[in-house]
Image (tube, rainbow, N blue to C red; front, side, top):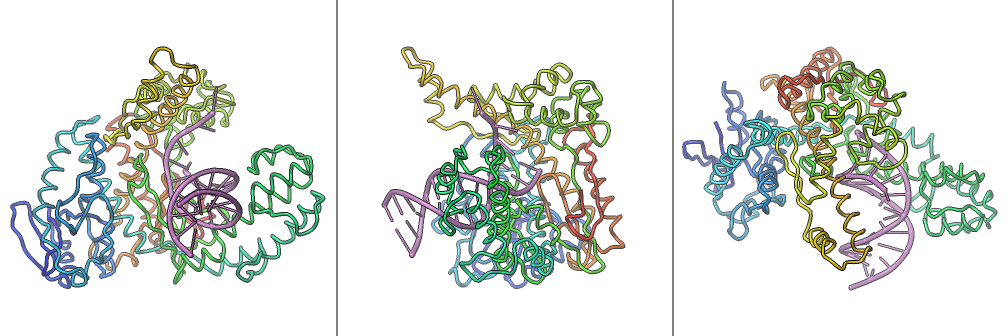
Length: 552
DNA sequence: AAGCCTAGCGCC
DNA sequence: AGGGCGCTAGGCTT
């Protein structure tokens, strides 16, 4: 049963599958949702944008089990059908426009004036989307509908994670900053440790004290070259090649400076309140279907600060990581029986070593990453031929995706998310290069662009399908932890963090095992959901810890 | 002053 | 000549 939610001059307009409508005052909406969620068969709430509608409900203490996010599904369908995203309603000042986020407050209709009733348009769009999901065939019947459901469930989880927040110890964070950098400096000044290191770099470069603009890459390069260090940039990996005594303190300076600017005191002031970091996740924010984040750098949380992620008193963090997710996804996509054998245990890379294809785990990892990213140099390129011999199906699968991209075609993930077609400039360059009398320069440019697109589509099928697996995993964990009558979200075990192939649950200590089981079982379910009975396993490692840094 | 770009580095 | 991101600082343009 779908229940379409939309704005109405007098509050919310609800439309059910039979076209029956009901108008409820905005203030009464949360109670209505709570009531429907407690019934035996709660509806699937249909709305324009989960990120807009759900947070106020959460703040009112109301959770929703299932939804259909029109904006996210529209994005998926537009990709599949190779068309632009449709406007949600063609009226001026439409209450909900796609794909842009609504910034207006849900329960603050008056300040907006009376918005037009949108339910007919929303209900119509739902009907269109359901029909399109039905029509579109992917790897299996219903695959795209599954993706729509998973994407929408992810949006619910994202809102819940922001609502709950990641437990964060400001005290521990401040302590680690002081240990690494010294006392917090006044605005505009550098902490003691950075001052010392910068002075040390100047000494070892033999430049006048206070004359080096160490934070300016161009000036730093000039200074390094002036000291006889032959570098073209100030990238860490390039500096590491050099033997000069100034390099060590410089690298340390860069690392600590990075810590301070990205996750230092200012970050703490801005992002941590009342013991919680509340990242804003953006489901579907990446073309491949991965999530992005908006503010706070949630998906780039450096290892350096993970000890500040700390469970509440009497609670624990249950941290789960899908082991070698992407190569396993490739195994399942390609139905490579030999690689499935290599992945039978918890360590797929070791399994590849045991298959005799390569000599070391490091080679196995580099080789697989190179195969999935399109690496053409170094170690990865060296071991690729051996991987191709032993795992012909897996390696051919990504090769095929790469060739399609080079031809300008689109590719699809397991559930049917479609890669964006290359732009007009790309097509034109390609046609130009094929014409007669074209210079070698143009041909080379076209080849370069063509290969770049191939690397993109090669990676898209794997990264995108891994993102789908992760969504299914997350949805399964959420459903297992779900219990509508056990009180607010944050008194029960609940998801607090997601990082592509990693999930974290904050749980009362006595319910840690329960959460660990949910994480393991949902991973197995996700594999079956995407790939049926294919003999591919998706093991997860689960750690029950007080601090994030203790996992792995 | 504000907006955009790049370099560089963090994460997967 | 290795895929996808976000963020900050510096430095340029408008």
